[in-house]
Length: 138
View 1 (cartoon, rainbow, N blue to C red):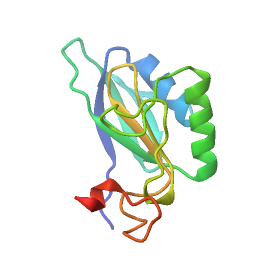
View 2 (cartoon, one colour):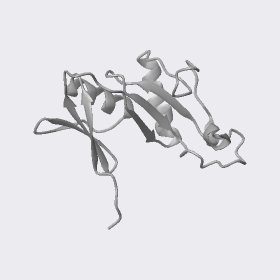
View 3 (cartoon, helix red, strand yellow):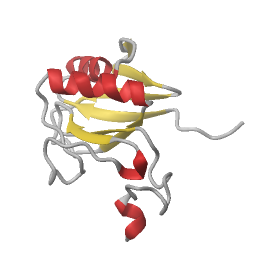
View 4 (spheres, rainbow, N blue to C red):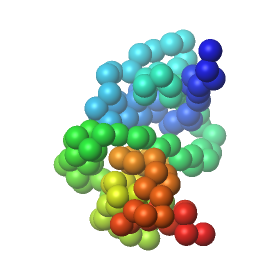
């Protein structure tokens, strides 16, 4: 059996609201409840949301999507009026990147976690891409 990531626990102020946000924005099936978790299934991996009142350290979650899925997700982001950026440092507001000759966008979830949707994996365009991923230029 190949090793794969099964689940990760994600802290949230309101697990139900966060689960609805994720499933609606990403176009995923509704979440399910498993004991004290709100479980959002993303492919073979689940995000198991748990509530906390402690300070939440921001984490980064990147989702690989097809071009059509990206279009639908981006339409939902803009329809909600959510701020978005072309970069993880929030230096390019209101823009989409084209790294690796694909598209990528960053936005925040209700808990301050940084979410990213990309159509090409990092570095997949190589140095011959028209829009080389900046990580390859370091």
